[in-house]
Length: 497
Image (tube, rainbow, N blue to C red; front, side, top):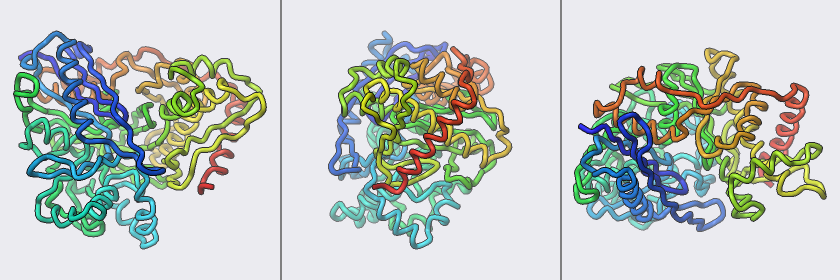
């Protein structure tokens, strides 16, 4: 069997497909952006049909660019934006509403009501998550309450719920597979991570019919086979993981204590805690890192809603840059005497604050503040937020030790200036890998190892290679002053206007 593996990386702003060859090198890539829909302030939606079309298109592009046939692909691995919700008709596959995206805040009031009723502890104890609009469960409850007849149809078994992985598998297999994996299930507010099962009590609280939930499988498992008509041959789907867990796998963070951080639209830091479920005392998330051969590995995760999206805002919202990569050069030229702080709470603040009502703010503006200073503030905001996450992780899990080496990936890590500033703010080494496509690589490894054409876990970890290590260079007094300024800016932002 050929050792080609196809990774589907379905993200928040674009869909990508990457063909990896037998030596785990990229042979072909397809990518297509799709529409971001903003019906109201704080609401974010996607058209499921547009997502589906973009995935099919990019798979065909990647196969063509790799110069292979679908029959040469041993397996497909899928990674996806995790908490985005789709509900569709079991009979037709037609979605009953646009997908509600993980960034969407429409269920903030529902979350507050449940908190006031003392329910957050119930959810956190079972799922490791907080009651926040970020997660899938309240989005699903909103759909069932606001689409006419949806809850009754769901109870009758007429409707299917899924995160994007489940929806894609359903479509790829022609409706034959209705499944998800443990990592995506663990982000729904409906899944008991200790028992590895959908939780009846939580389903009752949110009034969600169990009939609409998919079967939960290991991350490397048999998820079905694509319809041959789509790509010219039937291809087995053998790996699935949510994007941040896939990046954790792609970074070979298999040993407890290892940390990776991904810088895409948002920023997500994940600390492997092994078989230990670590309840957070600092408002981090306790989640499933991966489940292989029926054995669950857990993690602490910190989620930042806005990272690369702040750079997109500079480009598309303010129009002060034309290309994202300009920000590093501009930041380097910024006036060192200006202390400008951007708190990018465009959709609330994530960990460790979890303030859904907070909104973005800029502090320290002067008459001389310009594109360079704003660019530096946007990039530094990512660094400060990462430090907040790592500080909380070390407080929660003493076994992690005081020494940190952060493995990084995502679009922003291509910027040397940003990675150096990250090391400076963290006062810790930052390792950038040779292969930056770690999210797709993680999904591909799940599928390729399951198919028997790629190496096992130990060999995969051995092959991980560091392209460059960034060591901290900033003076301690400068770092301390900068962090104090950031903390002051965040305090002023919390609680909204």
